[in-house]
Image 1: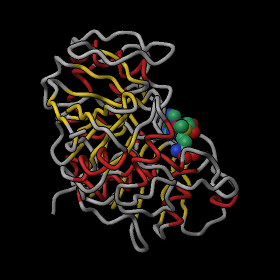
Image 2: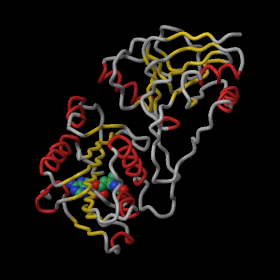
Image 3: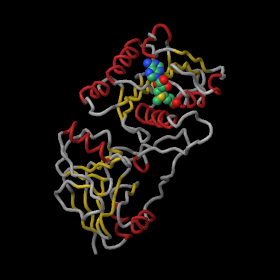
Image 4: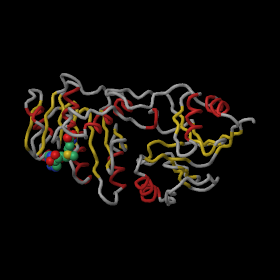
Length: 333
Ligand SMILES: C[S@@+](CC[C@H](N)C(=O)[O-])C[C@H]1O[C@@H](n2cnc3c(N)ncnc32)[C@H](O)[C@@H]1O
């Protein structure tokens, strides 16, 4: 059987595991697109219909170039490929791109066999620090034994569509360290900025118990940590960590800066975080920023647009974020 391809209209978005409802809510509130509820068991693909394929949401009427934050990756030029054999499926994909991430919600074994015929990619968790390659990453899913839905154009280059790290269950004072590791990895990818390193000064706002400070110290940087509560003892005794019990938002940049990095994981309303970020950037006393934007209930999307609109900045949803987004800023040199 010859390979038969058919371009599909619209786009498809992969939800983060367990976060399909956030993706649906964002599409409704931010894009005005109502989406169906995910089915309990896989249902056959129907062309022209908005539908969930496992955690992958296909929207035939989506024509935007801005994608939802809650999409782990986006398939911006979807197509169907009908094939007779596993070898045909692999050859058909390789004719379009070298690197392919599979997503499996049905026909699991056949997907594995297709993937084995494609150039090898490593999908296991990475050791931090890790550099995301800039090579384009295609994405495909088998709809049944002889049809796949794919796109060679996707929203990000990370193998698997997201960054995951080998976890350290012993040393970090909190699991929050994974968010900063991921944010620093994306900051390097998007802005080419060096990771924090020895000789650099970092302000960690809302630092307790110290997962983020632990990452910064692990990279060799000096840390000025501010919280209402102390950090874990190992950090409190570290001579490269200065701890201040204070409200992080009432410390003015001119009193404590300059810093190479200002990072914040403070639990606060976005309305409070935004002017604080603007003040730091306007002061010229910070080079780079990573801030968690904590969200509750309904999201004020106009406010999120103001974070994203700050020059040399980006808002994204990390693999390690739940109901929160992350703001990245890197001063253009
Ligand atoms: C999610 S925790 C931070 C976890 C930390 N990033 C880590 O890796 O372990 C949020 C912290 O923000 C602190 N916090 C809340 N409001 C604050 C403020 N105005 N100034 C300083 N710290 C604040 C809380 O005390 C809490 O320790």
